[in-house]
Image (tube, rainbow, N blue to C red; front, side):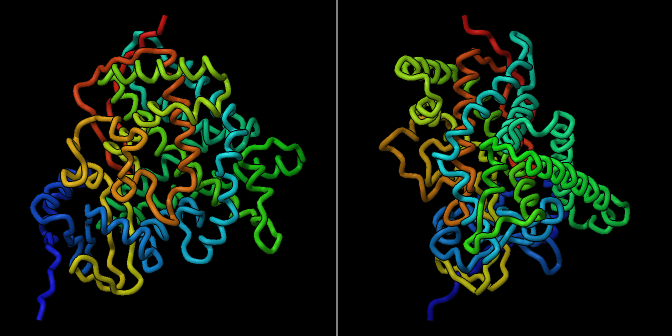
Length: 444
């Protein structure tokens, strides 16, 4: 009789003993466990609760794509995040998710996005005015504002005033920080409730919803078509001919703010830092842009023909994936590679570890955009910056277009120089940069 393989287990005592380090940055703790235990291990996070950590890319593809019907998102997204952003595409499950995905998908087709490219570029150039040449600057705040402004302008055109935009950005970021506290310190859940911290942030979320409802109402009353994402969402119809109800529309907009701005700003910051460390790639992007613009001034042509720029962004997201964990829970018991998983197992797939796995990538910690050249792309089963399968990020084209324009415009205007020793990270809900200190030398 063939014996079953046991999933290696890291005890609760080890989790508690490293809790302060985990709160600051859990990645070294997880990496140590992967190194010692293998590509799949169980971490006890309570006397009866545990999480299975995975850096096996084949297992990730199996769960996200091959057998995705047996897996749902975990409580982190379907309950914990829901209270701040509602049940939109990111947090919805089952038939509700299918219905919303089918409704919203057309708004993110490449042809539809083409009409937004000018707004995206204008938002980017407006934020780049904040750059002070030859001064040491932390570039993250600029790129964070850039990404938020890009989402806002693409959604609302000029409908939102700057005061509303600033308030929405503050609330979005405050809610994410609160959720991180809840997830990293589950043993303080009673305190977050008793002290009123959760209630305070729920009130902030309600304030954001009221701002968005006013913006939507003003658009409806104006009867003016801006051809932005808001118009697309308002015009979208279900199979029965009905439109989204207001609360659902607000949920989807909040999801776009949450998922669409921070991940992009993180990826742009890491890309910019890597370019600062590798100036030869700045010049390649710059020269590619010059060649493209000699042939056409069309923005869509720039986006689709900037292959070197795209490779650089893709390699940056390999090394520093903004969504560095993907969570799933199996509905029915399942097995993979001789390991058995009882129904309701909490699985966390470490995108960060899979993207740096020495068995999957040559020189995994080395910045090498050439691995993403045309004809060399063999990574669909081990590269997950936008997830995989039916629940792959609906905004992946939007994000790539935005990042290619942002990096192309930045390298056209400046040469970027590093003023940091190493690229530091702060893993929160997304993988955030820290101390992204740079100087920008204006091109002559």
